[in-house]
Length: 159
Image (cartoon, rainbow, N blue to C red; front, side, top):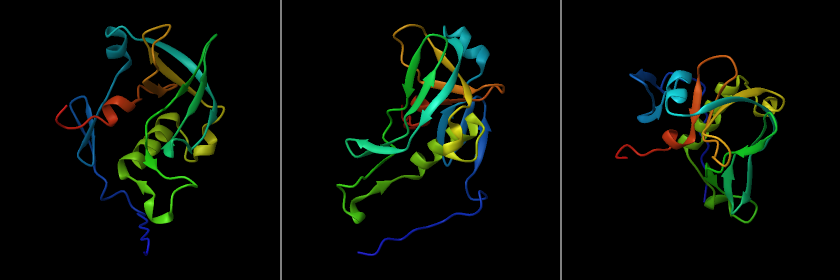
């Protein structure tokens, strides 16, 4: 079986339109949060340093982007979403990926403010959390009011 690889060198065919408070990317909607909205919903905004980032298929052969974050007296690994399937136990023609998984990685890199995944280590982000024991689901740029939310990024249209 022959594997085809497509490389896109232009973002012209990847529309990004802001409609109201939703970021629409290739027909998929992600909530465009603001710090004010998050605080009004009971989230606490804290700063965190990215201490490690990895693209891995160690977790059940599911491609994941675990990002280790350290805040003031706390630490968490942000991620846990399956961005593709593969790994060393898969045959080449069994590996699966998606444009949406790649878009998630690139959007996170944009939020962090880097052009290389490996440059994320040592950078700072903000996290929105509802307190002790709550999962960090939303991260934001350290200065700009720009946020990434895995939950709404992968939310299906009918939800």
